[in-house]
Length: 169
Image (cartoon, rainbow, N blue to C red):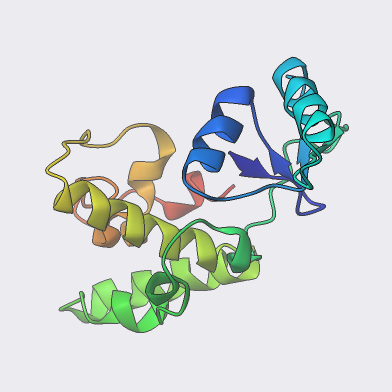
């Protein structure tokens, strides 16, 4: 499930069913999968329920996500309220690490991606809590020292002198 620039959920039918089974309701979705949603709306009309879902087709800006709108991220409030900068600074030990975190953090902040970092902390915590294994890391994400500190990957980008700009370009 993703959000586009208009704060609309971009879903497929499986996302929508999973969300509804968790008790979350969507009033408006952006999707190409409409058959089951139309059936759902038909039954809502038939049984006089107020749970109709408006359907929009994805527009040309489908890939522009709204990272800054933390209210739409599905995570507990304690993570939404997390002081992510303080969380990261507590994990560093050297001046070199501090400088790297400050550089990267400014880049994430300028891009409005701090809620995404909070969500990643939540995701990693859930993986650990549920004993779910995940990979060492792949692609350009391993160049981010902040993602390393959060635990998204296990590649120390300072140790291997990786440029964080590879991830944030």
